[in-house]
Amino acid sequence: MAYRTGAVAGLAKANMDQLGGAILAAGLMDAAELERYRLILDKSDCFYPASMALISVWGRRQLA
Amino acid sequence: MNSAATSCNYPFDNAAPAAGDRFANLSALYDDVTCRHLDRFGIGAGWTCLEIGAGGGSIACFMSRRAGARGRVVATDINTDWIAGPLPANVKVQRHNIGVDPLPEAAFDVVHARAVLTFVPERHAALARMIAALKPKGWLLIEEMLPPVTEAWDRPHEPDVVLAGKARRAVTEVVRRAGGDMGIAQRLPGIWPPRT
Image 1 (cartoon, rainbow over the protein chains, first blue to last red):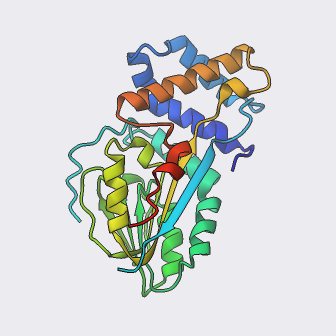
Image 2 (cartoon, one colour; image 1 turned 45 degrees about the vertical axis):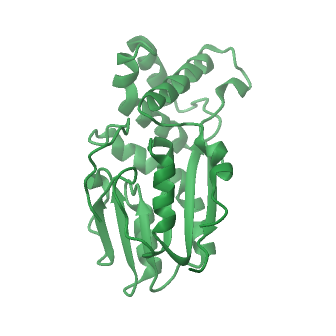
């Protein structure tokens, strides 16, 4: 299920807060890019269109 | 259960304050879906429940309410500091790494893991361990997130969208280097064992 809510940008921001150091250390983004991305996610009209879809699978163990 | 938790490559720093925000947002986005599945399984009074990767503990608390005083819930995580207290008396919190630590066999009516297998390098062993932890006729619910495909957005060449795509790829790469697999969500139906 994907939908618009502030939690979408909130999750993306928390992800970057937690992984930003590793991303910088790996040279995958620079500090200016990280900061600009955080500012984008802080905007009230953040363009993030939808949440990540959650894929659910389930099953039931057979009788022994 | 043991609590060795000796081999863990989890890329998120769950000691950081942002971990609480991450768990709260995950809960806001996905708890309704998860709880609906659990209710459909018939979770109820007296059930024994295992919540793996409990995060902030919201699903463990839901399980606790459904299971009642005669039931019990075991809530595990590699870092249990974020499981919000005070917890109901039927909830036991256990530090545990599903990638390497054993589980009791045939012990639970339901086992749930959300956003766990993506980050566990030993994901097939973890899945086998979860299945073995089920009682006969017990339910297993696995949920993983599919990252947004930023290239498919309406305005793919706008600078903000390009940067979001770069950030997504950076997160994916950091997770991959830690042994994770951000693509596992779309392959879940294929790896799902039809029989146990």
